[in-house]
Image (cartoon, rainbow, N blue to C red; front, side):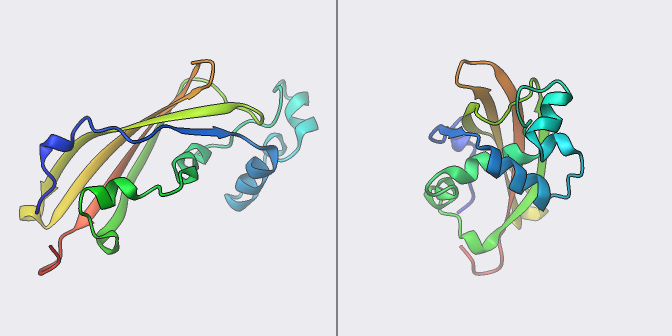
Amino acid sequence: MPIGPGVIGKTMPDTVLTIEAGRLQFFAKATGQTDPVYLDREAAEAAGHPDLPVPPTFLAAIELAQPDPFAFLADLGVDLRSVLHGEQAFTYYSTAYAGDTLVAKTRIADVYTKKGGALEFIVKVTEISKDDGTAVAEMTNVVVIRNLPGSK
């Protein structure tokens, strides 16, 4: 059964995550960051930062901090074996740092199909802010669902 437009506006539980320096350093190394401001607190402070800044795209991992980050798909009846990552986009408003507590609020912004329903798309928008309300970023994530013959 196709995912209908009635899910547009549906929200997911908020995710709250306190950013740990070690997690930032691990992510920076794993993604090939070579700028020392992402790896060394002294270098970050020498560059004018109060602590290690959050590396680009790290915010994509915030939703994975939920106990079941894909529960919304199961709630929609989606077979996780048919899910693909379509695209991801970020709009940054301010820099987050180690020690900050971030709050992610996610909603389904759109759903649509292509190829006669063989592909369904779910567009999620996540607004990320510091716990004091300062906007950090907006993240848009497109989930693709392949509807293979006999899969639904």
